[in-house]
Length: 388
Image 1: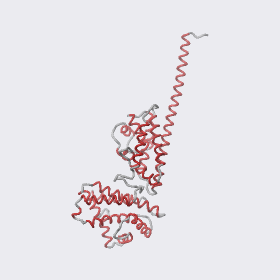
Image 2 (image 1 turned 135 degrees about the horizontal axis):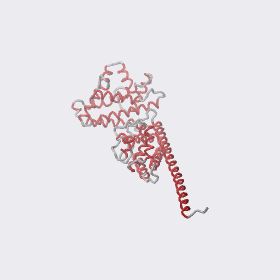
Image 3 (image 1 turned 120 degrees about the vertical axis):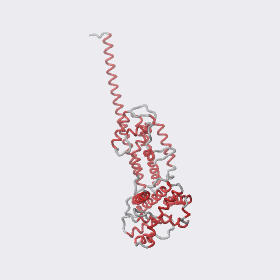
């Protein structure tokens, strides 16, 4: 039976609706498939970036994997996502889904997903997050500073390009989640690449609160910086009213001698090997001392008059605060430069880390196990105890 005009129009409309719904389902399937590809690619690039950075740092230092590298590798994807969220001013449902997966897998993060999204979209700043991972023309976080130094020490920058590629891929993929027509990724990537290129050229100029875990800067340069801080405190304080210049100079050399030898003695090695390592450690400082490593170590071990005097001036324990450390604190207060006391300790920390890294390479079994870190953390704990 032939269809009437009205029936034909109705039939055509039904077919059109069916075709539209089928096409819509196909498009939806393609979009969902694309989103899944984005999720997978972001996960892959985040893993790849972590592996590249970790391998670079391990080549640069056999002894230490700095906390800022471990933490920063976790923050890197969030830093990429954060740029996109800042430009958008909000998170799409698809982006929230990815963030949910991320935060569920990294429960050790010190901020929640809600706090993170709010901060990226214009809320309060996550200071610790940015201190580790931010890189701009004006600021470089500790993650990047450490990574840049590792690349310099290894004499390669290919890994930097690989990490930049990972970062830009994560930015692009994340920007498309929930907004296929997004155009925010390109300006973000351009600013990021410009900042990285700018900061890597200045990475050896570390801030004073930065421990040189990778020994990218020569030990002698650290000692020059330590002496500069010390001389500044002597100059700007009133300490010369009670201690003469020669004694102050002897105290500076003495704290190097004492710190280096005491640190080496913590090695799990035989006594004769410790003496060899202490000699090598003092040689690295390129300073002239009143006694050699063996004389210093034996005087303290045998509790001679000289050994007792060394302990009195430079040791730091629950029962006793060495004269030198009291003088250092007094000078920083008198000069109104308390931060320089912390800077002095941080630079000394870098010197001992450099010595440990060197000795671990020179001696097949050095007996060190993050020993510089243990030594300095104990010293800091004792100084805080006596300041309480």
